[in-house]
Length: 342
Image: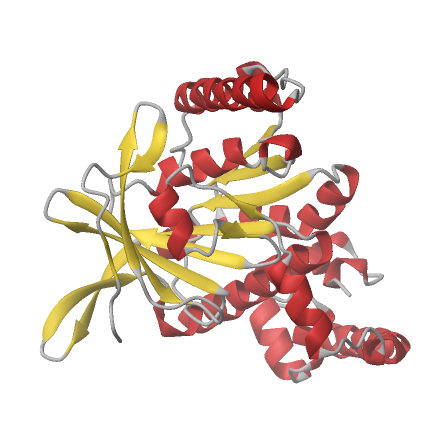
């Protein structure tokens, strides 16, 4: 249950959310003194909040034992999960066919490597109709950096429509299939764009996503570009930042499972001192690296862009080259792929 559902005043509710206490489990696991300190409220107010939270947890505890599945059913579910193509077949191959729905995938890399390009590409490709092998869904694009370019989205949408027309034209000629009637402006209309300007806005929006997706059930991908930006700029309390981000990651996982959609979190890089030297690493620290199902690291190898599967419960570690063209993501001219042994 979400913390905002508790019968509290708006000011107290706002203080809880700002301090990172967005669900009942996080509230019920702390003492009243810690809650009072973190949320900047009195001990009496903290005690009343804990009392309400514990009552709500007890009322909902019976439902926790429902919904058990056996491993055989889970295997079949995983094998049948839809995937969103990246428009780069080499990249799709190492991803098991594309970005998986019901998973949270983190994609990180240095500036200029193509993170936003991948985000825009996925927001377009998720709309490829089912008859063309797509999901026929819609996209939510959460922009924290102001890097989303609608002109670029239109350019990629136009290329996607051209590819679909070529595909359906071939299918119509040889198999009497119906041609897909889809225009670039239709694709742009199905990208729900949110501009977020602070970490408090980001927290509030993530808390609102479940309701928004319930009202727009065709949403099949949520892209955050980037998850990092406001939490690197505005946060001094690292312990509180870790707690807030952990709560956010849990919410994304819940959304992915509940609505069978893909969550893609774009991340920046930072320097990390390791083995006597500074090295590049994805931002937000080691604790954050456990918050996603899959982790893809983008890097340069000479003049070539590469993607590397750094972490996945079901995919082997592998790398593939890709390129960013005027039409979007495509195979690199070298089409080379290497498996990296860990």
